Image 1: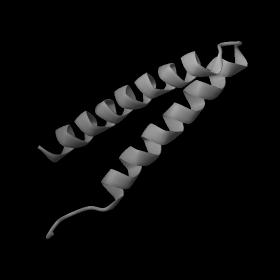
Image 2 (image 1 turned 120 degrees about the vertical axis):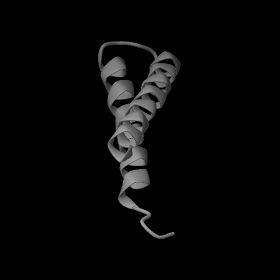
Image 3 (image 1 turned 60 degrees about the vertical axis):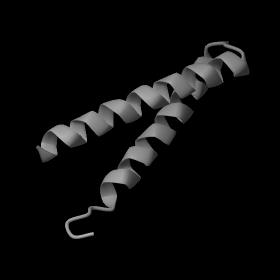
Image 4 (image 1 turned 180 degrees about the vertical axis):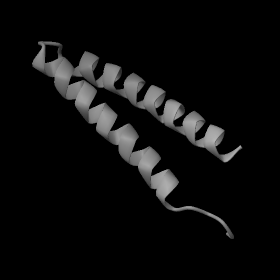
Length: 61
């Protein structure tokens, strides 16, 4: 546990959830139905989480 940073996983989760919420809300605002907007939000959430994770890994190496 030495050198473990609790803020990195929390930041990753927060960015993923906020991305999902933002994309879903914007899609529904532009008239997309709820199921499609939710699917697009989930895809954006996964992509954002992968992007943040890869950026965090680059900084550590």
